[in-house]
Amino acid sequence: VKAILALLGTIALGIAVNELSDVSPWLARKLVTVSARIRYGDTARSEVRTEELTAVIADRPGKVLKLGTALWFVATALAARLSRAAAGEAESDTPSFLRMGELPSELVAQYLFPTELFRGEWRRHWIHLAKSWALTLLIASLAIPAVHGWIKPTYANWLTLAIVLGGLTFMAFRGAGWYLNRFVLSNRRLMYTEGVVRRRVGMMPLMRVVDLRYEQSGLGRMLNYGTFFLESVSRVSMLRRIVDLPSPNELYLRVVEEMYEPEAVEARIAAAQSDETDEPSTATAPDADMIVAAVARLAAAVTEISATLSRWNLPVPRTPSDGVSRPETANDASGNHISENHLATSKQVTDPRG
Amino acid sequence: MTAAVVDVLSVLVQAYDERREVNGWQIISAARRSGAAVYGALDNLEDVGWVEARWDPPEPNPAKPRRRLYTLTGAAARTARDGLAELPLRTPRPRPALGASLLRTAS
Figure (cartoon, one colour):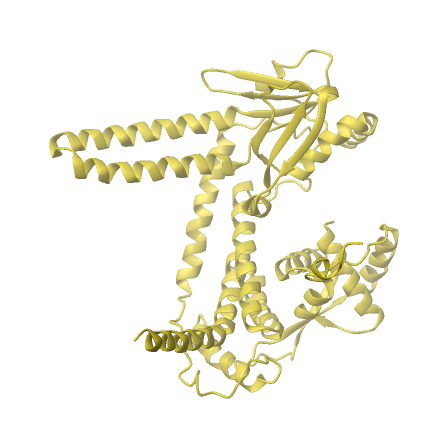
């Protein structure tokens, strides 16, 4: 019996692999068109790229590789769209982290001594807040059913209310904490301030930084954030590990340049300021409205993406019925007529205008 | 200008010199960049008017998606060639052979 089962298993596996290699080019074509919709929205370029990327996927050799490429297109398109939404449509050519000669916000200015030169301040990447909120929501969504399962109904509703209110308060607190956190660079030191009620201020002289490194996870590289590790001469430091800082490589270079070439930084700031003399200063301290607006834009982008995708409904996968009996077409170049056949059917079903 | 844009530009400049037009997949494989990076670069280059594109074949065919062929504009090709010449020499991105260290005996 075991031998028969093993045999059946092998056959099933073979069929599955065969089906997968047949379905994956089709799926890849679907995914690249989805990625174009996500990335370009309803612009004219979206139409162009939808058709063009389908052709690119057809050119790309290797059935499973097609799928991988397509998945990467979708992932980067999602990341690009969401980060564009969170940042707002580009107001300035230079990204905020590269603008020079700005003034410190009042929050930070109170911690700087008069003669030191402020170089920049950064808030943690929004993913930091997003992680914390997601965790809170997860715990609350697990706790509420648990409360209803185990506690008398009379008390359960009150407890649910308490959990909801507590969760919202906690999220608001975390939001305020994220808003007030600053990582500061001056010509003398690295500084970190945090805390809503209990306030913590830490610093490390640039002279005493013996090692500086940063790490980026996969998601971090897509959304451009990373964790900084600072080794100093002193053993205990609040600045040893700073998670989720935005644009880590630019930040890294800024810190390193400040350590090795402070004169170059000075020269660049002077040049930037002489450029800006005829323009009104655009350096404004970030305010709470910006965060609210960014969150609102993010939410709007998510609904917009889901709307674009649902408006253009995805057809059900049509498994090729002759998948097993078909002559071997693993070599993509030789199976040209078959891929054309695929294209014909897929084009027919996916055309948004029917 | 990002490294991906530089890679895409150098592919386009080479194609321009050889009087060829290149399609998306040719750029991706020649530049050895991910498709998403190449198309991000092409978007930017199109926005600033450095590249021109046309469909191949020109008229739409419902049965087969058309490729899109890219060329640099004449002025952009000159600017890009000068710009690329000023960059430090870029070695081709290395692809280490798989398992080479296993086969090699320690000396």
